[in-house]
Amino acid sequence: MKKAILFSLIVLMSVTGLFAEGQKDTDGKIVIGANIYNFQDNFMNGAMKPVLESYAAEKGVEIQIVDSEGQQAILNNQIDIFITRGVNVLAINLVDPASAESVIEKAKRADIPLILFNKEGSKEAMSTYDKVWYVGTDSAESGIIQGQMMVADWNAGVIADKNNDGVLQYVMLKGEPGHPDAEARTRESVKAFTDAGIQVQQLALEADQNWSTQHGNDKTAAWLTSSFGSDIEVIIANNDGMAFGAITAMKAAGVRLPIYGVDALDQALTHIAEGELDGTVLNDGENQAKATIDLAINAAMGKPVTEGTSWVLTTDGSKAVRVAYVAVTPENYEDFRK
Image 1 (tube, rainbow, N blue to C red):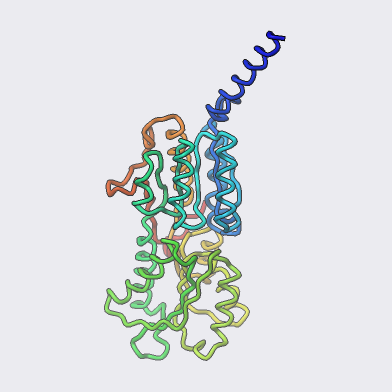
Image 2 (image 1 turned 120 degrees about the vertical axis):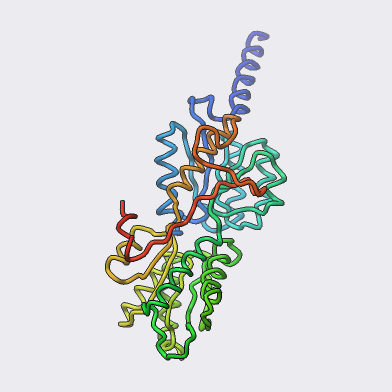
C-alpha cells in the first residue's frame, strides 16, 4: 500500500513538474500560444497568419493560433486557456489596445513572456512587466506615405480637381476606431495635403471595427448615390480590404475615382496592374510575423529577445521592434509581387 502511494506521488510530481515547465518538455518543442484578433481581417488572416505558421515550423517550434472573433472577452478566455495548458510564451494580437494592461497582467501573474503584435499597448502598460515586447510598425508612417503619394498624384493631375475650386474633396474609409493604425492613417494621410499647402474638404468618413471589404463596398455605394456623390475627388482607405469593397462598388456604379489603400496585399497589386487602384503602402506582414516568432523563441529561452536576429528594439521606452512601410505605386508594384 505504501509503495502504491509512493508511486502515485512520484507520478503526480512528475506530471506537475512537466506542466510547470510548460509544454516544451513534453515533446521537445517550444510552444507559442497565439491569436489573431479576427480571422475576418484580410491583412491579419491573409498576410500574417500563414507566415506565423510557416516560420514557426521552419524554426522548429509549435504555434497554436486561435481566432478571437473581434471580442476581447473571448481573447481573455483564450489567454487563460493557454496559461493553463502551460505554453512557453504568448504572442497576442490585442482586440482592444486599451486592454493591454489587463492582458499584460495575466502574463505577468503566470510569469510567461508576452509578445504583443500589430496592436500596441501604451508605454505605461508595457512598463509594468519586464517580459513583454511589441512587434509592429510606426503607425504614423503608413499615413504619411499614403498622403505623400496622393499629394504627388494631385499635383500630377491623377487626382482631378473636378470642380476647379482648388480644394481636394475626399471620403475616408476608416478602420477600427481607437486602433493606433486607423487613427494615425486617418490623420496623417490628410495632413500630408495641408502640409503641402493644399486645402481639403472631408465629405464623409465611416469607420469599421473589422476593416472589412463589405464595409468598403456598402459605404462607397451609398456615397456614390448621395447628394455629394458627384463631388468626390478621391477615396482614401485605411487598408486594402476596404479599398477592395470600394472598387467593387465603383464598378457596379460605372464610376472610376482615384483610390488608395494600405497593406499591399496580392489582390491590391492585381488591382494596380488592372488600373483600378492608384496606390497602396506595404504593411510588411511577413517580416512582422517573422519578428514575432523570433522574439517569442528568444523570450521563451530566457535570452535577449533580439539575440541572433537582425531586429532592433527601439530606444524610446516602447520596447518595440518596428518594421518599415514602403510606398507601392503603378510604377513599382511589380517589385512586390511574389
